[in-house]
Structures are given as C-alpha cells and as structure tokens.
Image (cartoon, rainbow, N blue to C red; front, side, top):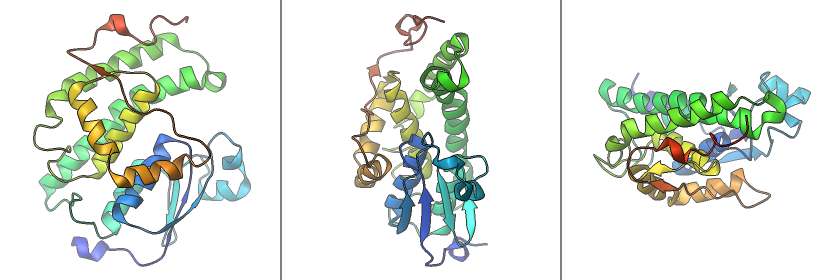
Length: 246
C-alpha cells in the first residue's frame, strides 16, 4: 500500500496517561503532527490503572494508551509509529519513502527502545526509584549505568553527523524516542557526551515538545530534564550509583 492509503479518518484520538516520559512521547508526537486529541490524566502509580474500566483498555495496567478508529495501542513506541503512518505528516517530519528509509528509522528506534530504555534506564528506575515495589539490585543498577554509557559512546559520532536530527534535516519519531531517553537520563543524573547534549537542546526547544511537557505534567512543573555533559569516554569513577549502598 502507498502512504496515502494509510491516512486516518477524522475520528478523534484519545489518550490515557500522564506524569511519565513514555506518555510524553505520545503527546509530543500528537503535537508535532497537529492531531486533535482528548486526554485522560491517568497516572501509573495512582491506582487508576487497576480500575475495571481502564483494565478493559489495557489488562497490563500500563500507560500510555491510545485509542483511534476502535483500535487500542498500549506501547509508546508503537503508538507514535502508528500516528506517523496513519496521519498526514507536516513539512519537515521524516516520512520513509523506501525500504532503506524505513530500516534507518527503525534501526534507531529499536536501538533506543532496547539498549537505552528497557535494558538500562528502566532497570535503574525499577531498582532505585521504585525499589519499594521491585526490590534493590545494586549490581544490576551499576551494570545498567555502565552499559548506558557504553552504548551512548558507541554511537556518539553518528549524532549530528548528517544534520540536526538522527536522520538528517527532518525530525522523526526516532528523535522523539531518543530525546525522551535523554530526558530520563537527566532525571537520574547521568551525564551524556557533548553530541547528545547539543542534540537534546535542539530537540527540546521545539514548540511541540514544550506543549507536550505541559500536558504530561499538568499538576506540577516537570523535573529538570537538561542532562549534564561529559567530555570523552565515560569514566567509571564518576558513576552515580556505584558508591551507593547495595
């Protein structure tokens, strides 16, 4: 099918979620694409996700959740990919025109979601910031921190090489994913190489990001999401977590 055949109907989008980086991804993409939506400020730690009506949407009791044309999507990366394929894209937003384009976009997206989000940052979240729920795991946290820096150093030379964004001059859903993980890293006090620092400043200055930030954190100012900058390769002696008690 051609891209034109995927353009969505005028049915309004509905989103459930607030207060998390993963919800921010969805609101940011909606704002970038100029899509009208209704939102329900469901917080993941409020008990709302265990209410019967919400569990009908997502039995795994997680946010964000998006509903459109009768379809429910419950993973942030899948949601923003759907939005970018189902709706017309504004000028300057990356739209894959070939298999090569699509692979380049997905390569960055899968890298961010697996190596940065799931394998490192969420490990830290579970066992430091949510240790009352998931327990402490000092060795796993230290390993996650080290691996996060290893992966950033491995791709730092690719950031900004071909333009202001990951895929050149056009902003993409991969940029939403990476920037949100850098937000997350800032919240945890993790410093990033200069290419990522400069890249992050460019992305978070976009008006759509600023609007999404207000929607995601409606009740209080969001945390400081400006990461610290480091020069050269990561030095384990600067670890945020290795000096904490196991």
